[in-house]
Amino acid sequence: MPGFELFGDKERQQVNDVLDSGVLMRYGFDGMRNGHWKALELEKSLSEKMQVKHTQLVSSGTAALTVALASAGIGAGDEVIMPTFTFVASFESILAIGAVPILVDVDDTLALSPEAVEKAITERTKVVMPVHMCGSMADLKALKAICVKHDLLLLEDACQAIGGTFEGKPLGSYGDLGCFSFDYVKTVTCGEGGAVITNNDTYKTNADHYSDHGHDHVGKDRGAETHPFLGYNHRISELHAAVGLAQIKRLDEFLAIQKKNYSVLREAIQDLPNITFRKVPRGGEESYAFLSFFLPNTETAKKAHLALGKAGVDACFYWFDNNWHYYREWKHLIEKKSLGRLPVEVQKQLPDYSKSDFSASDKWVGRTISCLVKLGWSEEEVRERSKKMAEVLSKL
Ligand SMILES: *Cc1c(COP(=O)(O)O)cnc(C)c1O
Image 1: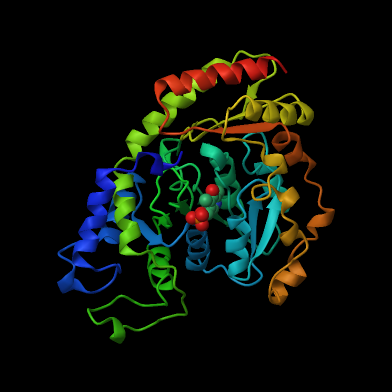
Image 2 (image 1 turned 90 degrees about the vertical axis):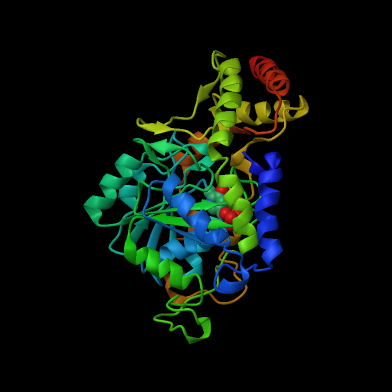
């Protein structure tokens, strides 16, 4: 997955364009910038690639989620449905605007279960936020139908699945809003960065202003601009955007490598009697950033994970026990440990997650192992790895 594995001259050239002018900011300084507008160019590239009208670049994937929610007018006390299996950024971005994260089970797609979502809807629910974990997606068709029926927003977190598609549409573009991360370990990286994509003109305008202190970006005098509403600083720098611009042009190359490596690994283990694969919903195509599979039970999965590590098959994850990606270890959220006082709405409405029953999620995540698919492996390395994986897993 990490695009940094293949950093080279293209990234260097883009960064040098920015350093040569010395304009590290995405706005203003028109005369000094030698015609370089890296953030603007990257936004255009992303909109084209993702087949949407608008992209708003920001400083991280977490910022993208926050800005996406804010741009749609989500705020204090609004409930946002999110999965039990995701990165902590999901609830961080929701809490950041005073909204309430409602955790909901995942199914064998390893993403939001549509049935569980429907059961969790209340009169305060405003958004359903599926997270396309580990290169594959939630059943977006079913989730969209639920959102239409209950008049909710569909916000896709595609941070780990850039390049995947659903019904022919790029992940992130199927819902009302989509988010990407370009942090250092993502498929497309620029060090730190993120993006919101949408076809909605109002959300784009709101995201544009909100992510830059409310600036309306009218005219050529930044100091004279007005601020139609309160904002914040989630800007990306021109240096980061430059790296991202080089990387996005290589997305198809990266996806082809991921698919090739993924296929070798999958073929090596697919006929083993104790292995089944995570479900990809009908109409979906993975980004192939990870290969995720199920063992028959939690105990075997733990053993398999240990054995893979011992055999030198690195970068395989057992999410069930992970501190950052599964609800079981989110003690800070469960115990509401914040530095300062949380908004009253959050205090009142946040469910007592110490009493929640997420056994439906445990049933799948407890059996899951996900192996990262790297870009930098040689053919020899992938073959070696696939042999080792098959050997270890067939011995269990
Ligand atoms: C990486 C990631 C994020 C957050 O991105 P940052 O750029 O690191 O803030 C959000 N959601 C998911 C699923 C991620 O993997």
